[in-house]
Length: 351
Image 1 (cartoon, rainbow, N blue to C red):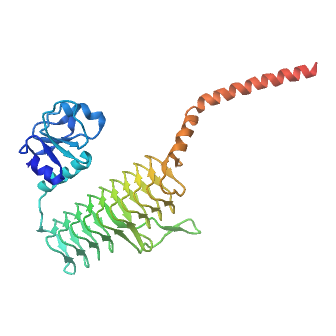
Image 2 (cartoon, rainbow, N blue to C red; image 1 turned 30 degrees about the horizontal axis):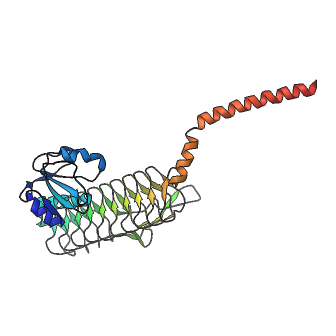
Image 3 (cartoon, rainbow, N blue to C red; image 1 turned 90 degrees about the vertical axis):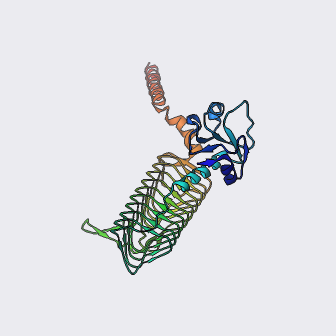
């Protein structure tokens, strides 16, 4: 339970109303009820500011009320960012501070652990592993030889991290993800068979990264597949060998990035986007859902379609090709009329 005063101090905001008003959870503004906190940031939800039954509401400092409301108000610079911080506050209050090693688990005597680590039941920690302080390894996790994991990182149940990979500090890897499996490298032979190319590199995941459930990041053929700091990956993403993803890039579910692609910083890839191998994608690039990128993309572009093109060009093209059936019918009619005119012209010429 948190009071309005506590939350306001945490957010560096100001309270309008009862400082002692307390809440136990966070709710959407249209679903607010006593004991919950909600926020208003999207104009289409403005009517709920005046009808919500929530106990506390976060509002932007520059928002002017157009009527009376019942909740206690906390004014902040950005209500959307504020509620994200509040959710973190509630999450930290609920978190169980797990420590120690559960039985049974297998921990090599040749591994090293920092302070206050947690190793769940049936976890396997191989030789040469180095765990930083406050690392949490949940049950049924496999950590291969010589893996390094930084401070405060959480590895949830069922994750597999192959040998030699590096995971930074303050990361979260969700259940079922696989880090460091072999890249898809096979050399075609004269007899039609494929010979496996050894994948001798690793995966390097820097700090402050979150990886969703069942996402796979392949180890490099040589060198490293690199995920730079601040990247956020959704569930069910495939990142192939030798890929490099720049800082603070966000990628949604079911996206596939083929081998040796270099992605810049602060990019946004929507769901089911696909990137052909060996391409360069610049900084601050947005790729729309289900788009297929088959050429290099300069910085500061928005791409859409398959094959992907600049969004503005795609939208102009869409105006044309969505009317192709009608255009075809019109062309067919013109062809018939031209044929009739030609026939009449030939008849006059024969007279």
